Every structure is written in C-alpha cells, then in structure tokens.
Image: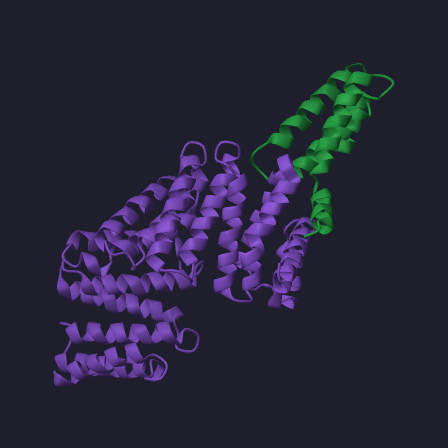
Length: 92
Length: 355
C-alpha cells in the first residue's frame, strides 16, 4: 500500500489533495467494514491515514491534518499491539 | 477472589494477549497451551465471564476489539486437540456467549451470525448436559445464523448452515425421529441448491451421501420409495467419490449402497442381492483387513447376511459362504473388543447353522 500510494502521489501532483481525501474515506470505510478480520482492516485503515498525512501536513492543511491525526489516533488505540498491551497491563 | 481464581484470571489475560500477539495462530498458541494444560481447568471456566465483562467495561466503546479475541479464543479452544475435550467445549461455548454480548445482530450482523454458527457446532458436539437439550440449542443457534445468512446475501454460508442443521436433525437422539429426518432431508436439499456439482463437487457429493443416509434410515422400512431415493443419491455421490480420488468415501458409499440393496423391495430380489454382493466386494478393495479391520469385519457380516438370502447358486454353497464370512468377521469383532457386534454375529451364525 505505501509503495503504490507514493507512486500515485508522484504521478498526480495536482491531484494529491483529492487523493489524500479519498484515502481518508477509504480508511474510515475499511475501519467500519463488518466483514473480514477486524484487526487487519484496522491496519489497512491506519496505513491509509498515514499515507494521507504525507500530503495533509500540519503546515499545508492544518484542519485536514487535525481531523486525520484524530482518526489515526482512534484507530491506533485499538490495534492488536494496543489490545495486547491492554491485556498485559490490566490488573485483575 | 481465591488464589485459584486469581491464577485462572491471570492465565486468561495472558492467553488473550497471546492470541492478540500471534493473530490467533494455533501454531503459536497450542504449544503454550500444551505446556500449561493444567491451567485449562474448571477455575478458568468459572472466572471467564467475570474477567471478560471486566475487560469490556474497561474498553468501553472499543470492547468490540476485546470480543474479537474472546471469539478467537473460542475457536482455538474448541479445536485444541489436547486436554479435556469436554471442558474445552464448555470454554468455547462460554467464549461465544460472551462475544455475543458485544456482537449484536443490529451492529455486527456478520460477527453475530458467525458466532451463532460456531456456537451451534460447539453445542452439537457438547459432552456435558443432556444431548437432546444440546441439540435443541444447536438448532436454535443455526436458525439465528440463517437470519443473516440468507441465500441471496451469503449463499455459501447459507448452504453450509443448512447442511450442518440437517446433520443435527439426522441425529438419532431425537424423539420425533421421522419428523426430524424429514427436516434433515429438506435442509440437505436446500443446501444442494448452492452445492452444485460444478461449483462445489466435494460438498455436493458429501451432501448427496448424507441425504442418502437420511433416506436409507431404518425408520423408513415401509417406505420403498425412500430406498430408491437413497440409491439414486449414493450413485450421484459416486460420480465424485471415485476410487482414485476419494478411496475411503468411495468404499463407504459402496458399503452403504450394499446395505440399501439388501433392504430393497422394489425390482428383482435376485438382482438386488447380486448388486449388494458386488458393492461389498468393491468396498473390500479399500476396506482391507489390515488397514480397516472394523469396516472389513462389518462388511463380512453384511456379506454373510446377503449369502443367507441369496437365491442364485446352490443353497448349500451360499450357506457355507455365509458361515465362512461370519467366522471371518468374528476374528476381528471379538467378544472383548466389540461385545455388541460379537453377540449379534453369534446370533446370525446360529441362524445360519440352523439352516
């Protein structure tokens, strides 16, 4: 995914902003997709947000940057690693 | 909590973490469970709901992610080949029921249906509790799964669930045997709407074979037409179950076919008996005494029964063949190992000698 998207950005310099918006939509959709494996969908969503953020930088698009960073943070809270940590650190 | 409960809760926490880290990979989870088998105990079953509910509370809106690993635990423990199978199934059922507290049909229809379906499988295999009650639960859960698994939306899952449901209906434990077998036949036929010979040859053959089993049940004794249906379905199964591709399934089907020919009232009795002998002999090509002693012996017993009825050839020769076949069967089906079969064959043998 990162390789393909980086290429896409390079080849369509003028459309970078709209591609980034599509990536955020993709991330939002796949994170809510009811089928497949949830943790894998989540990882795909995170990858999409991360790629979008290479265009939606804080200096260039501060509002979009803030929204996407927020989505990314929410998704990252539930990754396998985070859930694993949650199980590990929970005191019973 | 008592010490045993605390230890069980710690083990559960550790196990869920392990499942998360390994992406639910049995090759990573099972070796660790093998080492810690003593921890898969009744105390774990007891603290299970309490601990999982506590996790749900902690995670709030993100409790779905906890439910995912609880569900994965259920799948892993039900398939775990070691330990107490009875307890493993109880743990699996507990896991699915806890996952269902989060997977509501409105919010997570896919997960809900999959969990209902797996819960049904666990109930149908359950060792504890009363078997009719467990099967009743399995039927309920399969029917719930079918609310999501419609033929239009999920044809594959729908067919699999119909087929599984049919297998539960065919179980011999039901009181209303005939009614349930009819339900089984209906469900198998529904499954065959998706399991076509082109798209799902294996599933198609298995379902035809199961359908034939249902049609050839002894309860239909008076119903000659069902035996004809059974023969037709076994023959269809044999289109896929060739001796080269599926030797065991082929042999089992031949053996079943022989039993149906023996019972068959339609057509010429002589022909039916000759067909039965031929099918037994085909089955014996795979069911050799060395590799499949029990199947081999049961076919010897069936062969003997057929020889007793045989009209073709000399009566004395047939009787001698029958006695020889019973004696072969008794070499494997000994009094110590198979008392019931042994007694049945002794009885058959006595009948043959009386002749």
